[in-house]
View 1 (tube, rainbow, N blue to C red):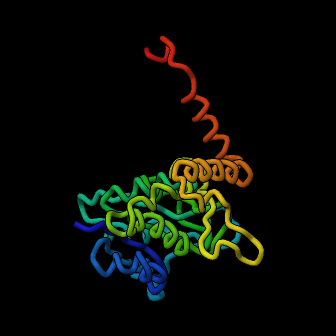
View 2 (cartoon, rainbow, N blue to C red):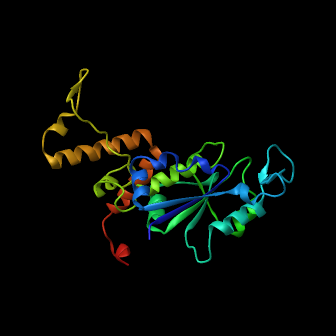
View 3 (spheres, helix red, strand yellow):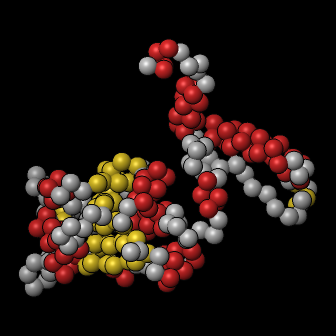
Length: 245
């Protein structure tokens, strides 16, 4: 069975979008994964298929109704479906590479895309829906975030990337940003590629890349560096009797 994605949205025409191209698109054509969209408007109420209403307590904007969202989820999730259900929202925990790997190992995901001021919290609580953010900023809706999440996961599915090694040396794979890359020409506009990379000494090249990855992570992402440094400090501690127990 291929990995299955479903997206609940008011704008199904936004999919597959860029996911229909390149690696993800070819994998979609091969059947390595599938994508189904569900139009939330199909479950709207009344002649105008309303999906939202004014927020209790007042305030600007509209909130998507829990009954409409629940009806759409019931259609998208048949009994026994064990896929993760994820609501894309800036209020969620931040998406990580580890999350992408976890989702890739499952049967698929069901992504809920909000609009307006968001979705009534009660349906999220009732269904135990994961709330995930792709970053500390606000988008017009969850659709771009859903595309980002799907791209991060689909590329990890077996056979999608040409080289299994590609995923092992990427940013975040071992807690560091990836090292910088260089290719021909060796000298470009007076800027030479690092001499070490042209040496043919594979051990020295690996050491250079590790040092470059550590330096870039420390300079650009001190939050990641602190986590990495803490782990490496702990792993370097001598094994004592207390550790053995």
